[in-house]
Amino acid sequence: MSHATPAGWYRDESVPDTLRWWDGQGWTEHRSPIPGAQPATVSSPKATKPVKLSNRAARGRLEELEALVEKHGLRAFGEIDAYRARIEGELAAARAAAAAEHEGLRRQWDDSIRKLSKDHEKLTQSTASLRADIEEQKAQVVNLRDAASLQELGVFDYEHPAESSAVLSGQLEVLRAQIKDAVRGGRATVAATGFTFNNSAAKGRKFVSDMSKILLRAYNAEAENAVKMMRAGNLAAAQQRLTKVAEQIARQGTMIDLSITPFYQGLRLKELELANRHLRTVQEEKEREREHRAELREQRKAEQELAREHERLEKEKAHYLAALAALEAKGDLEGADRMREKLADVEHAIEDVDYRAANIRAGYVYVISNIGAFGEHMVKIGMTRRLEPMDRVNELGDASVPFRFDVHALFFADDAVGVENMLHTTFAQERVNKVNLRREYFRVTPTQVLDVLKAHNVEVIEYTVEPTAEEYRASL
View 1 (cartoon, rainbow, N blue to C red):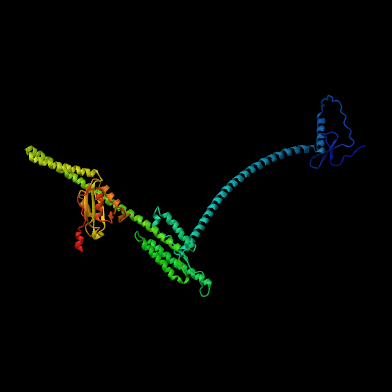
View 2: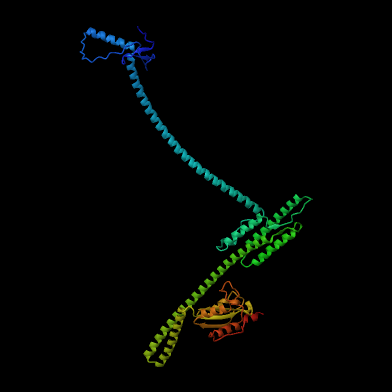
């Protein structure tokens, strides 16, 4: 019984008794046994002998094989393998190209990410800087608004003398902050709270507010002007003037009970005090410098006088030595003895000058007065190293006072500096100028000074208690 082969199924020559499915374009993996086929009998392998064919038989066999290839589609298998190899090559090339493109894209991506990161960082920094600038500008706006509101009430950051003081500048800064806080907080003035204007409480409050601003501005202007006009010696006058301004404002604001608060008045008075303290310190420093320069000039004069005197005495000594030699050569013994006495006096004078030049504490102590200029109960106590101490006394009375000084005592002391300091210490409470200690005036009488000198066993040869005051008495 013969069996028909189903359409699309063909004998698979590579596998005996097996059909394989051809889908019209190529072989599939579907296989099926040939219906009714008997299993092939496996025989023992036998040695085969090569078959020799003639040319005609070979051509016939070739044609038969080609027909078989055409019949079963075996040529397509070779084409499929070639196509597969070509496709696999193209696929490998495509994969390599895709990998290279992917690597390039990845690098571009990484570069873009890095660039974006840097841009983001720059933008972040720029944003932070802009925010800081904005905050700074906001703070400046707030400060400007605050300054404008304070200036509307007469509070300005004007130049204050104590700003340049290393000691007082910190106190001034704190004080100015307190003044501004008092103005901001409404603690600079006080006024009525229930005042009405044209039967309107709102208008009354506005009237009180406007009047308070006007009068506070006027008061602050006076306070600022008082600071700018401050001098070292007019603190009391400046404080009194500012107090009168506050009293005047209170009188002008009687209708609404308006006045400057004692707290704010105290701050402004303290501001004047700081200005005066600095100005007095500056003045005292200038006084000390001036006195120091005067003291140096006096010292140079004394040194120059001693040097000139030493030179004069040396010349005189040389003259006496020459004269002594001449007298001895003539055999004038009596004249030579007289010359030796003069020479001894000169040598003693040279020793005295050298001693005073070497001992800066040696000098003349003087006690002088000027009743025409200072009254009867005031003396000046000082010392000088001049060879002629009256030169110093005359200089003191040349231009600074209307009359010449009267001398109560003028004596030499090996420790003139010590005697002067002792008298200054004894009469420290009676000192006229307790700030500038080079101003050596004391509210005591010549008799009191003499008593102290005696109590300390200071050797004084001459002392005049009553001043003559000839110029003064002649001018009466």
